[in-house]
Amino acid sequence: MKNNLKIARIKADLTQQRLAEVVGITRQTVSLIEKGKYNPSLKLCLQLCYAVNRKLDEIFWINEEDFK
Amino acid sequence: MKNNLKIARIKADLTQQRLAEVVGITRQTVSLIEKGKYNPSLKLCLQLCYAVNRKLDEIFWINEEDFK
DNA sequence: ACTCAATGTAACATATAAGTTACAATTTGT
DNA sequence: ACAAATTGTAACTTATATGTTACATTGAGT
Image 1 (cartoon, protein in one colour):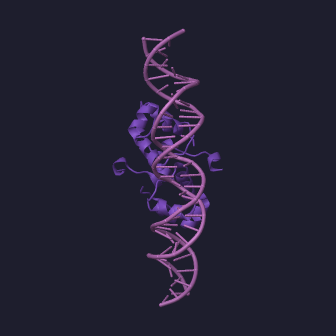
Image 2: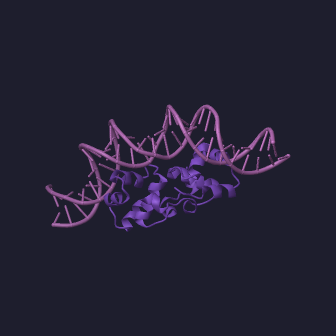
Image 3: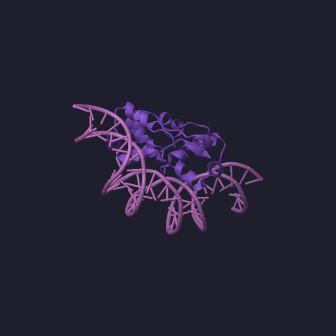
């Protein structure tokens, strides 16, 4: 699950810790999502988008091997 | 979790059953997502979009003020 | 009215997202 | 080089998305 969250977060001048607080999750979850190591829920994706002021398609996509 | 999946599915001329088969999930899961009764994973959202030939924001975006 | 395909929903089981705690590694500033 | 902030990640627990089976409801066609 590749994504642009890290870049958008940094542009929004937020640390993982701060983003996690805003969204109400843990820092570890932010880290794992940024690293593409898991598959967040739609609700969480939307909250992350609101926090970094982006839309879903700007942040999240799927690459071919994930479709397999 | 409100969304536009049902409309897009019908425009794509797919039944819930057929869409479920394409995406590799059960008919029941499609039904529950269309009814907004749960919170699908990002990967599933992307697969559903791919199947009905739409983008994430067209099907699953919710404005922050509507997000309760 | 009848039939059949399509859809809505339970109860329960399973897989996995996400939390908790903890510690290591990396980056940044001085 | 050092210290502090930030980030990566592991083991374990908990919450919930999704599957399975089953049955009820709705809608279109005859």
